[in-house]
Length: 369
Ligand code: ADP
Image (cartoon, rainbow, N blue to C red):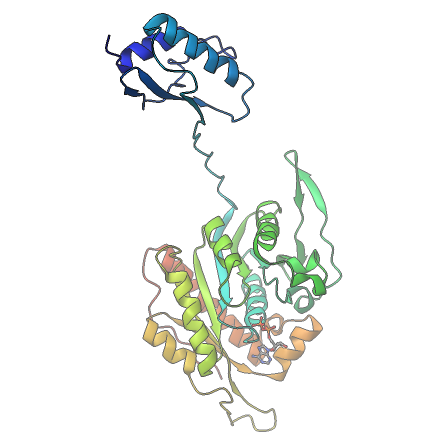
């Protein structure tokens, strides 16, 4: 007698899964790919869990059912393979549903002032009345706590809807968390790869950020696994790339831009910020010295067709403000405060254009005195 799949399936309808009492065909436990070669039959059974306690007894019952109800000469012993059902992973919850815009602040290389720009942009936005969060994700040198005078801060946990959430530290109207709050400086460097990625995911997903207009993330410099983890975990609105006008910095900034615009990542560039554009000594206010070259990031922005959001000069007070934990953006009427205020305006305009579905490429006026 010829053996055909329906015969086997009908035989298997006599096997009940002990866990539910329903027959295994109805439960979808018999895989479609029944293989028949003469009297030899191969088939696979699908179980939800690899350690299902009934695997052995179900396999045995299948062998018996096939020999009893189909044909006693079928070679089935040892030919039933056990597989685990591919259950679709539950869709991850959208992280930060109360946050309107998640912004990556990035640079090709370290030391170009990425954290200085992040902190001052955050403060300038808060001064304008926006709700702002700042996450220091720079595991290689978390400097936000110092720049915001919160080096000693140790965030607390609070129970919210049955979950323990980290409470961000609030300073100058900005809610912030830093990887630096949780690791000693000397340990930060070993926190690479998955460990750092997981720690950051926790700071994002298990913290009580609340409603925010802008959530700025101070990324580590360069391109790494951590960047990928962050861009894959979060629906990032856009990226801001910081560079000095210097050739070597620009080459790296270009790489940074490419990382975001690459089709797998596909995060739009909201604009470039040129930092350390020139130096003006206090005693010669009309003189500008282009220490790192002139307009390098401006030219790169034009070439890449992205806005230049601002040119920030080298000013002693910017460095001092960083070291003292009092960002210059707090003094809205100072020359540097005005510069960061305009940077914030250009940034908001670029985000708005992006959210209106326009390419953020319109020219913006970036001149500052
Ligand atoms: P990054 O985050 O890119 O590593 P930082 O923001 O930590 O860079 O800046 C490096 C150093 O340069 C800091 O001491 C900072 O105070 C200083 N700095 C950054 N931007 C300026 C600027 N425009 N004028 C003066 N000092 C600056």
